[in-house]
Image (cartoon, rainbow, N blue to C red; front, top):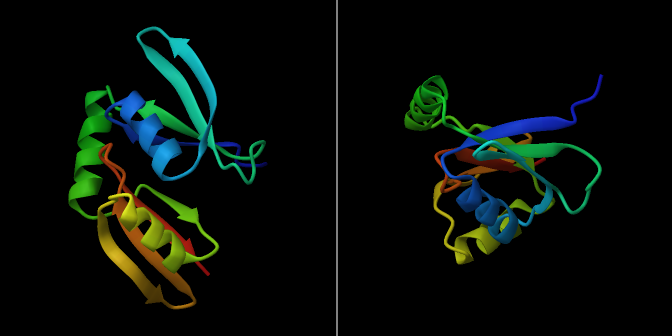
Amino acid sequence: MKIKLSSVFVDDQEKALKFYTEVLGFVKSKDIPVGQLRWLTVVSPEAPNDVELLLEPSENPATQAFTKAIYAQGIPLNAFAVADLQKEYERLKTLGVVFRMPPTQMGPTTMAMFEDTCGNLIQIYQG
């Protein structure tokens, strides 16, 4: 068994695509119309044939309630590994990314948490 797809609920797919590609540096993989919405995925440029991240619309009221509650509690929805956390933190800050937690040592791992502009908190980590 292997993970090939994960998802993040987003309030606006186009805004999410812009943030996840232009700011975070992922690349668009699939963009398939599904009615009024899209099957829209991004991948790491370092592993374009590996795990895809689905930018999934949060149209469902249950999804909206879940994402609002988890966001209000300060819980990140996803976590991405980075080679140099401090360098990535500085790069993202320069691009205007709003961080909820600066790089913080937690045991053997250093992590930071930011807002993705689409209703989620995302964690980046090194370690």
